[in-house]
Length: 189
Image 1 (spheres, rainbow, N blue to C red):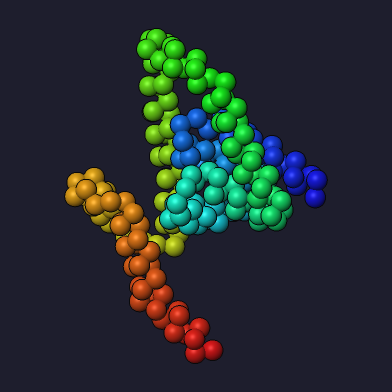
Image 2: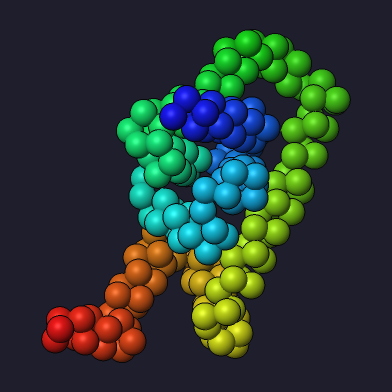
């Protein structure tokens, strides 16, 4: 059990320390630790957990840490994972807040902060591509493309709040003909 606690601590300290820019930046780092390095879950399971975590309020990296920690080592694993995720940010924030505010207008600091934006975009695009390719195993590719276009249209051009889009997608998934027939067939057993 101590080995699991140590692995959880190292994995989430690493993801928390390297994930600058918000929870979405930490997802690829967490995925690398959870799926590739320690093999605590598959790519598909990770994608499902990300989807569920996105529907819940709060920072996604702490929700992911709590779930993975609980899955690997129970309640103590969840506590360790969440603390390990938060600790690097808290320490850095306390140490550098005054320094950053002092030098915020300096061209080097400003340039560094602007350079982070494309890196975050590439990391999110890569993770999105991985989710799309894993989803394409289960769905037809043209349906995936239609879903992506409709969501982009609703959010970007019609200014529909993303929470409403997510809620609508969950409703469609729950009340789709396939899901309804699955529920009816399970109920008949």
